[in-house]
Image (tube, rainbow, N blue to C red; front, top):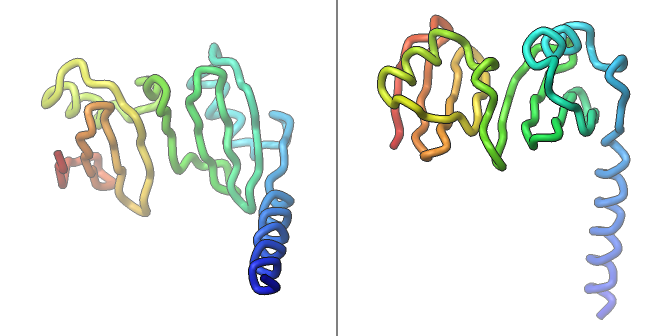
Amino acid sequence: MKRLVLIFAALLTFAAVSGAAVKSLNFEKLPIQAQEYVKSNVPDLSIALIKKDGSEFDVVFANGMKISFDKKGVWRKIKCKKYHVDERLIPALIREKVNELYPGSRYEKIEKDGKNFEVELVSGIELTFNSKYKLTHIDD
């Protein structure tokens, strides 16, 4: 019984410490590059929440889309489980290739992974593009 109480106490402590690292922010607290990205690419979308978790910033929009930025304000991940990622945020060469292969497809997620772009379509198809936007892998 004591062991169970200790485990429960440890879990509560971990949850409290983990939650303390996440902070809600105003738009002006985002790195300048992130502010400019949002203003120039999705100025018409309403922001529901901005939070900082460690060195990562997340901007959550009212439509459910979330953009994650690094500490410099460079986007790293864009995803939307509820609807789809706004096509304006998908690099043009990636968008062109996806439209060629899968016309009418919608995007669930795009993520910069080092020098590659990982794209996930709502249909579940995953595509990998290199830093020059050339398709290197399809996982369907």
